[in-house]
Image (cartoon, rainbow, N blue to C red):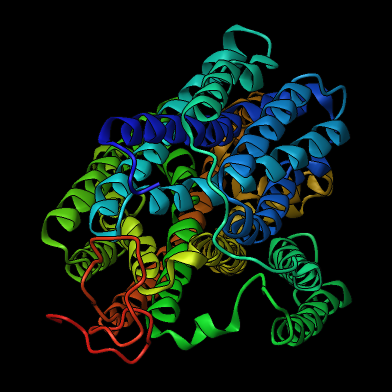
Length: 541
């Protein structure tokens, strides 16, 4: 597709970005609306599965589709992905109970895996590495825009209309994207022949499902040393060994083991994994700080976090443009790593005295760091690996980042909860302990010592109004103790995120920089420099 004229390429990219906007907006719009939806449908105990099932199905699908699109071309898979996603979105809006919603979200996840995998690969089909930076930066901007628009749109819909429209409102975008891609996207056959690696697909699916479930449930639904979590990790190890065995024998492996001989592939994906741990494992707790410690309402907290997304969009677009103009990507990766580490350190300085403005400034720095670095990793991997494996390598970058996020959320959550309990044990005033130990408080003590109470203002006010006037001062002491404990727990989260960001920055120094190719044709075996060999010398680094 590299030979298409510029206007056609731009039109195809607009269709791809519309597809990405459709998929990503459908994710961000759900977050603020889901509590209201689950309150109506029931099944609060399955709340997390609405997110978990999507993560599982999209992760499993992404890697397999990356390989299949290398073999048979991108167009059929992105069309199937859009169709599945639209059907899933429509059906989700018809859910009568939480189980139906989980099943339909799983269908959306399959479609999302198709879309995400083929969209980034299609950029590589259309443009050589030297030109990809600006387009991948714009794709990052699409993600950021959906993160800005989605939460507000979801909240507005559930406040002013039927919640079903959360899933239906952006279906027209999906229809437009589907028609544009069907009309404009060239029917390109794949550049790889051979049999589909079904065994590898089954084993890697088992590996991913076991890992994601273990990290999703560990420390929350089950103890880390429980038989369930140990069993899941054991299953993951077995699946990994079987996967390696299958890939070493497959004619066209789902994830060729030879890629792991390429240092750029390894280092970039390690950076992506670490960034995912720091990013998802820390940033998802910022709204908890803003609402629970600062005391901002859920709706207004979106205004506090919005600057981070705007900074991410701006930095992503700027990073892509500078990389395309200079042909250098390592400098942008280092700048992003430094800025992200600074931002994470700033988060560790937040306290009960922090204001919304101060929190917003901290998040702007974090957002800028992510925006500078995230598009670069995809570009570096695509540039250093054969064009015929574009779909596989693009999917792998997304997969490692997503696994990092899952691991980060699990580890950070466990650390936060342990620290909160430790803090409460030491800082709780004696008066409050006596108050909670009273027989009449036996059934309420656990709820009153849960920091989630701080982000439920209606429940908090209901409890306050039901208490006798003489115990209100004690209740206020309890709330202050909860805030202090929450700050202590979040401090641990942000500090660990800062350390991981520093490790990612150090690893970035080992990322080799090779010239960005000006064509999608792989170099001849004896050409210099050989872009496909892991031991090539870096250029200007």
